[in-house]
Length: 117
Image (cartoon, rainbow, N blue to C red; front, side, top):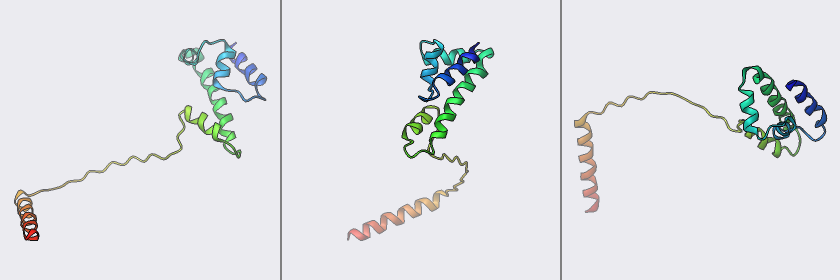
């Protein structure tokens, strides 16, 4: 029954571009949170996820159009990102010998004193 209603929405609103909020209202939910809560029920999870992805697919296809700013905005609201994140893990070991450090600090202090004179 839910799948049939979703399919009907996509047929009836094909020309004016289906949206999540439009689908939510068409199905009779009071807000998008209720819709996603309903989607957490195991028996409706796949149906709700599939409907969402159908809408994402519509926006994704719009990316090839000359004016795709609205599609980019919508896709960002679906969690898409237009930047690349690179995570690296490195370990760096620094061995500091106290004598070397204090001698270097003293040398810098002396050279600063000499440059003032």
